[in-house]
Image (tube, rainbow, N blue to C red; front, side, top):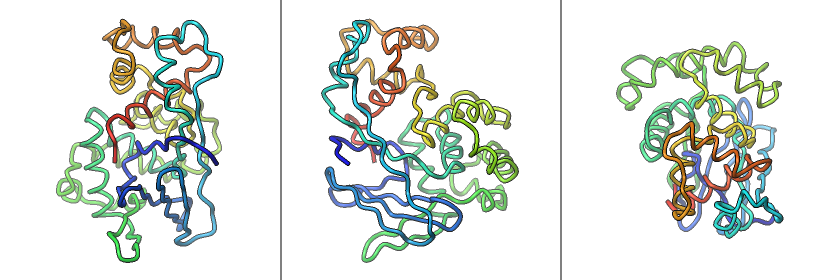
Length: 267
């Protein structure tokens, strides 16, 4: 598969020399290592029979609408952007909860520490070990002190609620369409529209469901085209973004976040 840039927005991506490496949970007891060097992606099965999801590739439309002029050119310059779907719905939900309210860098730090303390160890030959995200079963066994020592005391309640709900409904959730799943997740205490949309986008790569008026999209849209008058407040920006992106809402939203990842050098 050909692409120009791999989006490494998810906190489970780690630097490995000049490349990136990530462990994927692809089902109960099924783990894969994904490595990327430049435009070369390799996958290695650790254990289990299930296979990792393919990379999805996004590109700005070749014939943009006139309304898309404020954002089209800087995003089209990135070329084709690949993003790996998160095959573990539980991790997608939990990661969205961790990301609530705090900045991406802090969320990445908390996510990695939580994995290091409570996830399964995946040994890399001669290198630093990776850790999976702790399963829902593991999370409900953690004590209050476990959450506190990992810096996650303020995430304790929503993670416990989500883990309990996932153990009850997770199998049926995975059979739902992304749009229905985003609504269903909001029935869980501690999961609102932002978290539900972010989780489902991470899991499905349907970026029309991402909370596209959030601070990240507003920030990077303004950075990509500082000469355009972008609205500052979330509701007005949301309406403006819908007009600018039109039928390409999902693609432009994903590409804007990828632009931010590229500019920030996230890992």
